Amino acid sequence: MSLRKSPRHFISTRIWHWINLIAIVVLFMSGLNISNAHPYLYWGNYGFTPEQAWLEVPRFPGWMTIPGFYSLAKARDWHLLMAFPFAFGLLFMWIAMLWNGHFRRDLKTGKREWRWSAIRQDIVQHLRFDFSHEGSGKYNFLQKLAYGGVLGILLPGMILTGLAISPGIEPTLWWLVDILGGRQSARSIHFLFAWGLAGFFVLHVLLVLLTGPLGHLRAMTLGGEHEPTNPPFAKPKGDAA
Image 1 (cartoon, rainbow, N blue to C red):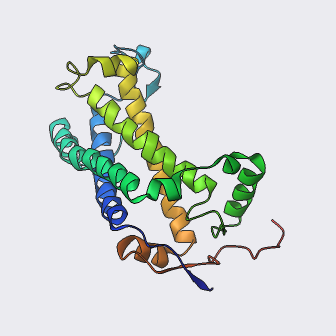
Image 2 (cartoon, rainbow, N blue to C red):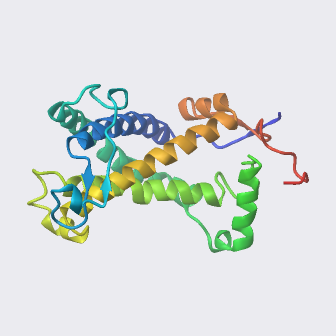
Image 3 (cartoon, helix red, strand yellow):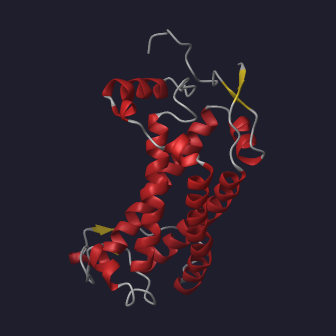
């Protein structure tokens, strides 16, 4: 396995990455505890009975929740505690990405990348665990799409829907509640976005483990100087799929 030079992660990216990781884990686990208080999801402004629900959420065991026992009050305290670093951290990250050019250079997609032939090539490379993508920048199209969706849709969406369902803020931001289709719709979207982030997290960790975890860990802590050109599970170029 050979090594090649790779751009260092900005220190702003590294700081945000680890703060955001802690915040999301605590928010998700405390959110599961909150979900246990009323495991039904509705659309619109109102919903009370199981018959009105579009989904009955299963009850989550203590090992998946914060705290490890059912307590709506304590779960809300943990949720609120981590909501601030989560929201302000995302604001900081967007300002940093626009200021240092990270978004324009590494995450913004071009017209050529939206061609089906280019997308198909990226899919084939991903199936081969080949993430070298020479000539396409730091990330390929699928990575840009995933990171852009998380940074531009899921994370901001969690903040906006969280504000819409917050009892203390909802009366002031009534217009946001209306845009989201009602308080119960905002709660449902909040739940779906949370599990979308959980799915991204699992896939992200899995790919890191399959493509050199030590190198990725070094890159996201110290900045990294090298990354593998041939990840352990990548097939040599030219081999059959």
